[in-house]
Length: 139
Image 1 (cartoon, rainbow, N blue to C red):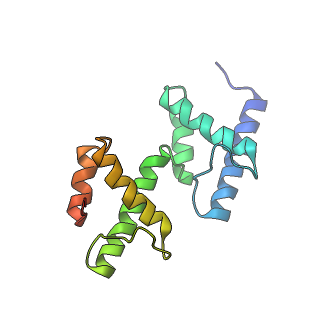
Image 2 (cartoon, rainbow, N blue to C red):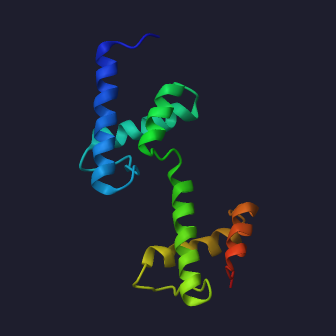
Image 3 (cartoon, rainbow, N blue to C red):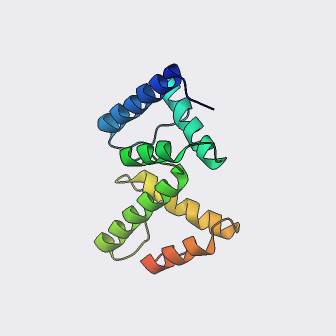
């Protein structure tokens, strides 16, 4: 199917909105229900879905990659939180983030979530190994 001028113009406009979001927030993790720009949130979610089902052209993927598009937000969150845990470990000598840690409550919550996920068998062996390499304690 050939793209119409209106379709190309919409694509260009949305890519510009995404670039502006990144400039303002420092990342491309636009929530699907983004209240400040619902159209951008829906568009970002649609691009993820289109790629997942093989309906997004390679040139579009490359263009979004250049901006820093986040294809799988949960993977990006995992990487970011592992880095934060590594920094915590270097600063404190262990990975025992307090359950209620005001300096970074999201890290504290994430650590508890990893313990729960492992207990329930929902954490991949690769992620278990990665955490153990950092010095993670499961207790």
